[in-house]
Length: 120
Image (cartoon, rainbow, N blue to C red; front, side):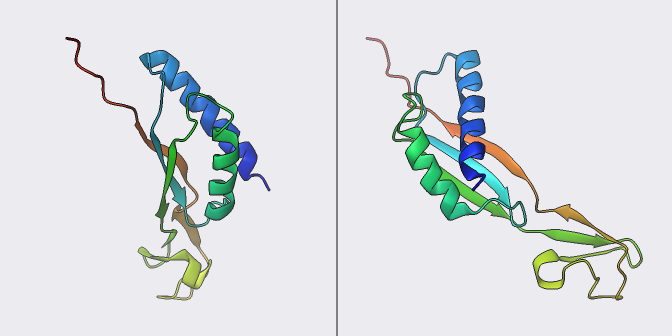
């Protein structure tokens, strides 16, 4: 299960962003996960709960995962198609001259922090 390593990497990245921006607490993290990224969302969520509980910056923070569909491009007919349904063979022309255009991403899309309380 490499999801735990992925979670540690995300937390390390969050620590850097927080330090650079004077953030002491994160409420929510939104990740974009490609459909064929090899990261299993349910494992990722379990690993997040365990690891985040040990790091004060993200303890109790919600993890949201947005799935990006896998899209493959065919060089012969210049068309896109859904990768998971058809694999590497273009359903439009039968060509194998294709490449993955989208769907292997793993990105931190958004970090939500507590609102600052007005001084007064």
